[in-house]
Length: 266
Image (cartoon, rainbow, N blue to C red; front, top):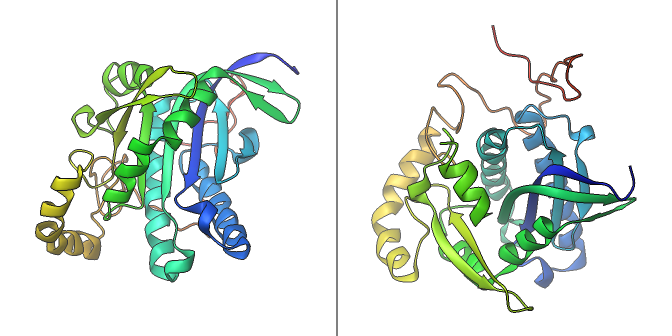
């Protein structure tokens, strides 16, 4: 219903240095981002057609039904993005490479025709665009993305629910003062880092970690937030990540639920 506030999972993706790119490059990056987002939703067992999306300048806003466990987003969705971004970096030159700031939250969102609105969406956008989060991604040269979640999401989902896909110790707090003078706290984590890199730490660790990083990349063992198997994060040891051009098995519709569930493997 138009104007009705509904509980939704919120994912916000923003491309690093998007505004400084030529128009043709921005169009190519936006197209690649849509493909990766659709693939990530499918690998999380979600039907992209049931998720609401909105272009947001340098990125994309995605709303998923509130019944979807946040663990799917922290696990398979984020893992798929991480892997596809790494493949994208290898296949393109510097002008077309892409890194992302990823935000996740949940809360009431007003679906007003083609427009999406809500305080939780606005707060997540403020955190994602803030200097401290941008600086973390700039320092994290070994990762194609950084994840930030609001304080309430961190306490209720990452800590409170004990997500099996992420370690609370891998997050670091970042406080942001908005244009209206409000202070927001976000929690940031970076794939492949035990903690969000600080400037001095990144400079000292980068050389020492380079050889080990290359070895993990060669064996496919670089994961997003924890390691369960070659090239796969947040899944069982025998899970396999399909590339973006591969269509994974579709979710099965449960007649007793209005949301399709992923068919379990035998």
